[in-house]
Amino acid sequence: MSARSPAHLAFGQSIRDLRRARGLSQEALALESGLDRSYFGGIERGERNVSLTNVFKIAAALGVPASEIHLRAEALLSAIRQHPPGARGSAG
Image (tube, rainbow, N blue to C red; front, side, top):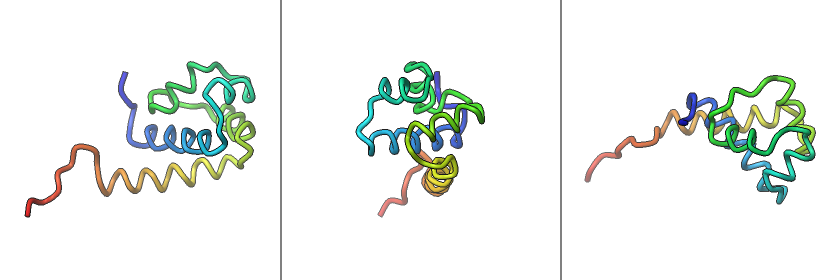
């Protein structure tokens, strides 16, 4: 399964970055948030459309406000839009 959209990909990457910065595995974050571990794999790959309820559960488990996840995702999305994957730079 591929990413649903660049926004989903950016949102998942922001969660992955926060999780790794805290030294947590997907399993540890799943246990802390009360969500399934395999669900996090799909989120981080941008394959899942995360409900608002789950965003707040994930944020609480990461120890950040939900807005922090969204701010990071917006910054990543901006970077993705400026430099889309597979885009080629000018030669020369």
